[in-house]
Length: 119
Image 1 (cartoon, rainbow, N blue to C red):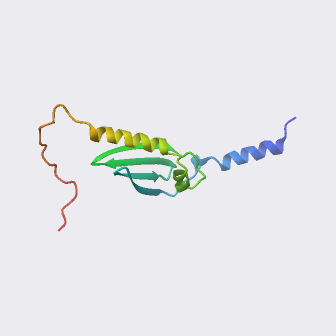
Image 2: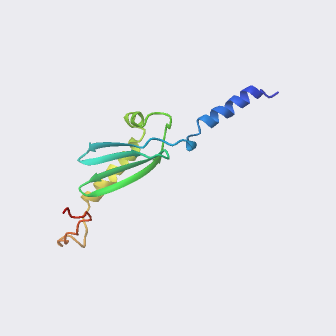
Image 3: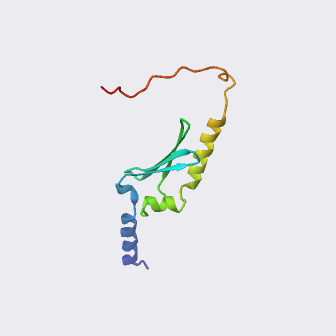
């Protein structure tokens, strides 16, 4: 026999915890890590972007929220995204430490700035 009350309660709980229907307050957390800059961004759709920049090299990873009803800062403090951050740091370090076999002794010209000059 079906328990209608229990079935109804489970359906209501499911609807309340379906985070795809929520809009999150965007947050940004900025840290200096291993000689580079780490930016963790919570987007309004609940996705997480993690940027790591070191010596002009930037890598980005995108992740889904691991515990959407937990504060974003708490997720970071408990290390829920540490695996992504470690991958970012490894990739950036690999690029920074790499050397081209074609451009070893070539001085590349400086590119123009993309910012508008101040008047």
